[in-house]
Length: 372
Image 1 (tube, one colour):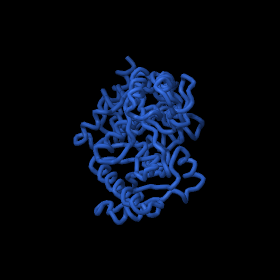
Image 2 (tube, rainbow, N blue to C red; image 1 turned 90 degrees about the vertical axis):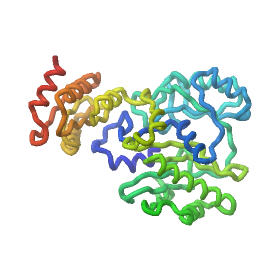
Image 3 (cartoon, helix red, strand yellow; image 1 turned 90 degrees about the horizontal axis):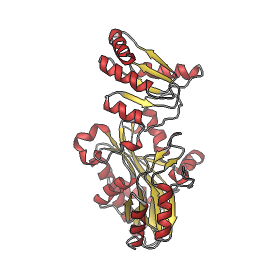
Image 4 (tube, helix red, strand yellow; image 1 turned 30 degrees about the vertical axis):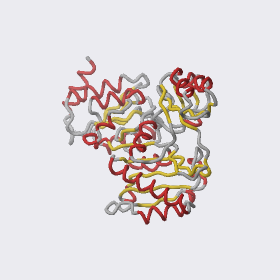
């Protein structure tokens, strides 16, 4: 996930290197089980799986033998790096194997109701309220596959590697030549001949080549129909029986598409989001929470970024990105100020307003209202 995120963060309004504690609010992030459901609806092969919310449910699912006798149990969080994460229960890893219903129940007890900390969750971690229990498949080869909207390609791009799995982030850094980009013409879309060529580059042959090509075409169709900005499959595998499976899937959808993707947006999980981000969305504020101690209330994205850069330059750490724009009301300014000061980490607030865009009396009225 970080491999794609590093590319997409080039578009981020945050120019400092502060550690983001929330995902960008411009995208809807879907849980893996929701993403896998979308793949199934599109006719794409995924492992058999079931969702559990309690250890007892995990036991019952495993005992049903519907998924076989060996299971993969995966914590559901909206962040990457879970395979190497740590739970506050002491359990190491958010992806575990289990070989009996009792073992599945014990693993579930150490996951559900606990927080998982990874290199992408921030210091607060993420709560685990659901897990998925998957059948264990034996695979011949694992690949990395993703589709993303990328500005430098003026449209979608397919990103692939023959080295899929949990080490893809290290591979991207240490062996960038192993990561291949395949730009897609936004007008013509992904054509079958191009998908075939990508499959051949990955080393697929004969029936497996035709099947992986079919899978790529279906993934692209899903990408376009659902207004997806990021679709990541890691790993994409060829199983022992020669069939192609999407073993894992993460999907981000453009927030602007909610009016035509409402069924998907109903799957939004606010429990996974920073409380500040949820409050900002409710108040219609352009806000991103950070880990610092100096709150920022600024108008204009450029000035907001420059303000954070100056704070960082002089040894401080911004607690947030907040652009109130040029047409904010006193009520919105009040909400913004209350949001900033409600953060227990904030020790000071830096208000930096360009009066040529925003009326300063409105800013003052909002701050006074918040201070009462």
